Amino acid sequence: MNALSLSEVTVDLGPRRILERINLVVTPGSFTCLLGPSGCGKTTLLRAIAGFTPLSSGDIRLGERSITELPPEKRHTAMVFQSYALWPHMNVGDNLAYPLKLRGIPKDERTQRVATMLERLALGGFEHRSVTQLSGGQRQRIALGRALIIDPPLLLLDEPLSNLDASIRRSLRGELRQLQKSLGLTTVMVTHDQEEALQMADQIVLMREGHIVQVAPPASLYQQPADLEAARFLGVDNTVACSPQDPSALAGAKTLGFRTREARVDVAPSVNALVRRGQVTECVYTGDGYQIGVTANDQTLFATARTPVEAGRFVTLQVPESALIPFGPDHRYMPSLNAQEHTA
Image (cartoon, rainbow, N blue to C red):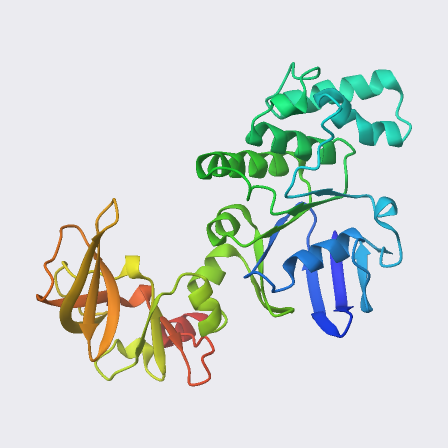
């Protein structure tokens, strides 16, 4: 049984169409990320699932039950907002206990469940602390705990880590994912951070202008983006026109894309590689090496090097075949001949 299914979900806000015929299946216990640039509709989709944004047409089902016409409080979903939304006049324990109080849970049981949740969040003993005394990471844990304490069948996260410092965000990613796995909780999270989605998700829903472009596991999405625009969003920052000397497995491709970190200018020649000869125009230190700008055939490409390379020097830029992403004349992803043979 699917934990969550969306069928032909469409949302109009005034004259503007925000979501266009969205179809999506989320399996029980999985972690799904809605990923895309600002304005693509991912937050609207999450709010539609939660019941805060009404549908113009379509259906949303939780298990076998349609929740399309139900108000948010009747959907039995839990949502964690970007802004934490904690009540500053309540201490930590009262913030966590409030959803249980609304559901008529007896005080003794509320106290026990709050203590258990705080231990799970590595915040044991924080019951009586004011939320205003907490760090950003601790506040986000409490916001998450307040959602989890009602044992929801579906957890919805609206960019919950975006307000945190980079180091805390990286740490909380792992904690959140571990907690989700241990609870077997079906989770849908909105993010614009590609690294976050790739690290946390079982499946990623890539969105653009109110449509779903691609649904895939992280590795498949990263290595086989649906089209050139998706590839660029996912960090493919170099594209070249395919030429006869490029690897034969890529024959028929119009354009080849690759990421700067996959290209090198200081390695021995390779047989199965894209090769371009050009002149160095810039050399920038990146902390773990150097980014090299190379002008070849009136086009600037970027590669990496272990040591600095002086401007004006002629170098050979190489990208291994395995790191090249081929696209056809329509800019759609085109499997290589090797991949087609393997599939056959």
